[in-house]
Image (cartoon, rainbow, N blue to C red; front, side, top):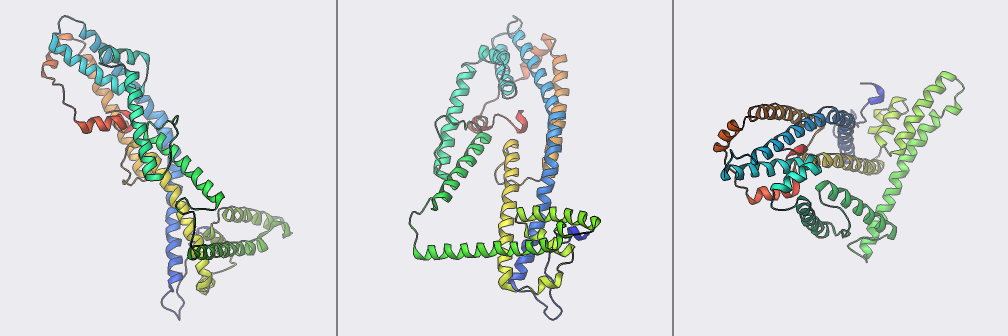
Length: 384
């Protein structure tokens, strides 16, 4: 492990076998922050690769599959008009056309597919979509009001989970900023003396915590400022180090600032172990805030992809799982393309299709299926 990546930990002194509560908390927070930093970095490395694979591999395959589905619907349309197929056959063909068109319209909302759907459906597709969007919108508005105390504007588009999440996050952020400017809580207009005293203590602790970070920063600047270095080679080294110091300070990354102190040997592990618990208290506050910010950023990334993949909110998702899911979906579309091409070739013969149709039964949809279709319209990446 290089000095630049040296973990910031407090080790027990020889004459003191156990660490204090503040020291243990410092080590625990440091470890968690290191873990979350690595996870966030992994996400940031994975997302471009994931997006590239979706664009270059998955989407072309899906387009190919959709075109084959369109061929299939057109063939069914031809069969429906042939005298070879009787009333019972035509009812099944009608059902198949509507089913495939519904799937296709999720991916390719074209007039050609709409025309075929409307030809065999009992209602106009655009009318159904408007009614569905309105129903989803009303339910989303109720959720926003009851769970988050957010009023959704009449013209807001919340017809999908992704749109609802984006809109809700924007409104919650606006709400938070407005409350901060007003200096009040949304749930309590008047505060007791006890609450005011607690807030005053918190503000004082925040100021002291911020001051602690500033002290570490100033100590680093005092020895690393390149303008004070006459040697050109050393000046270049200090310039690079100062860039890292400024980035860390801008992010309030206390651990990175301490790691830089260890790297340039401005402090050592003994210095950390001898630090008073009263000062560690403020360091720990900074670390808690940093950990919360890392958790929030990772959570937002995971939620974005879980919505895209239609995973339940309680499920966990890692960068590795994201790529595995995509690989699985790519294989699945490839298999679907192979299967539908065989079907198209086999069913070009109307008699063969009629023979198969005798074995086909129109499935009964359940209320749960209807509910799933209302909100999700299909499985991950839009196909069933």
